[in-house]
Length: 481
Ligand code: NAD
Image 1 (cartoon, rainbow, N blue to C red):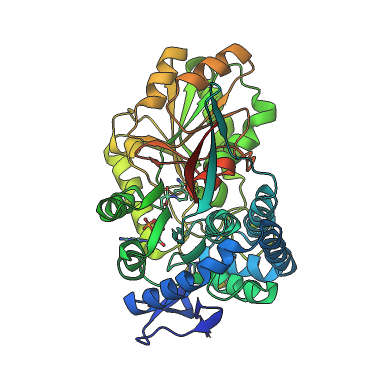
Image 2: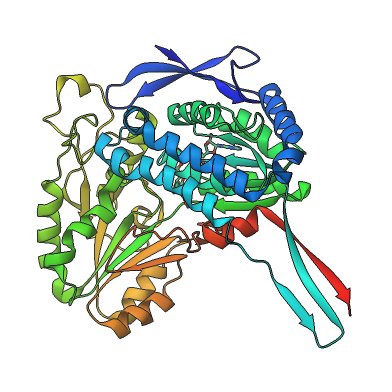
């Protein structure tokens, strides 16, 4: 069994108090590693190292910071197989998905921000003929970066890369459920020549290690991705300490399918938008809204396509749909199936454990992709984030009702619209209250665009210039002419 370590001041370090948590492979239900159960002492050491490293890293020329981050990206590429396998064993996701999505995207995150800092501009404002203002943007100091279990290295690197590229140092915490790729990233940083203390990785529970990062007075910026309830706790803690905060939280995303949608071409993408990564992507569409004339045909074709997904051992390269991340999460998702039945829903496919799993996976946390019809938008199944392989399909009459149903949610993260009418796509995109709208596509990501949610899906934006602005402090200099 592997024993993972923290990465503090450039060294692999055991937790100060010597406590460990079990790391379980969700495909088998077996313990496969021990994870540091870090506490405030470990976090204090990491913050001290990050603080000590900050002045020199902030003063390092952008070209040199860029070179080191590009070396980290190359290191990720070189370890593609090991990282993909680790991500699959930690999360239960298909290894093929980790190989083609998670790990390449982690390398892309480093390359994107390593090169972005070579091309940034700051503003100048000429005040009539009397003064010239210019804006300086400087790194803010130690950043606290906290990420969830669903896309472990993908989301952690989405925070680490802009924080470090802009000259900050960081203390980062992956989810306690999915720690392995972060540990490997520490090794990659050592090999790439990242100066000690610039990045520190702390493992452990949210309420202990995570909270210690949020509460530490020397951590000036907090970038958090996770659940809405956790985001509220972090916001409450960080506000009186005047920390800069970005919160990327939960979602209950609408997928709006008009009767003129080109189903022959788009159905595979709509299935993917619902069930990629077992539906455990914050951007997955879990409320599918279909224009009434297409409803019956859509349900028939959608259910047939979902039933054809290859559910199986995540380490089998042919698997398209793996295990849920933990027993607790599988039980939570399954409880929504009971709720949906009690609320009057009809389960059109799934709703149970897949039957033809290999013996290795007999005790794994599997649940078949599930499609439900017959539920009103106001019910709990349609209002609460399930974050698993469960979608509802609901008919709508016209464009106005589609928009009303889509917006009937406390969340506002992402939506997708499927139609061949350009004008309608624009109108609906403008009316739906979500931070990201995809038209005839899903998860098509350009790393320059603002990414984040409205309402209870979060505060602030990541990506491109938004991230560079978040991790820097603007200062205006006014020069009288
Ligand atoms: P979570 O909120 O339980 O945990 C996220 C991270 O926060 C983990 O590292 C955890 O250890 C830590 N944490 C927990 N309590 C903490 C506390 N009090 N202080 C500091 N840190 C704490 O979320 P999860 O179950 O890991 O992830 C699933 C959630 O993440 C879903 O709601 C999903 O929608 C959301 N998510 C959002 C996005 C987005 O970009 N908006 C992306 C992925 C996932």
